[in-house]
Image 1 (spheres, rainbow, N blue to C red):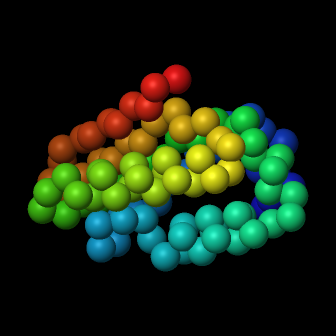
Image 2 (spheres, rainbow, N blue to C red):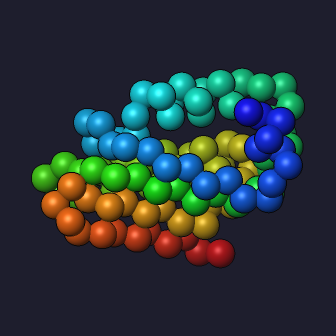
Length: 98
């Protein structure tokens, strides 16, 4: 999969929300991506993160936005946006400064 990711300038990730943040599968993917010796090729790539689900407050949006910010900071990527479609139908878009 990493070979395919290297081919593109933009990475779009979609994930369900479990317990106020993204799924364990996405967290494992991020862990493995970070540990790759050639992960520096992600430097300068754009990231959009889409998530579906929510808790009773906006803690979910904050948690997912924090995760996306940290990932991009560590990997040298450009966070273009975080979109959370909440379980109760509210849609929240957290746009990052470009």
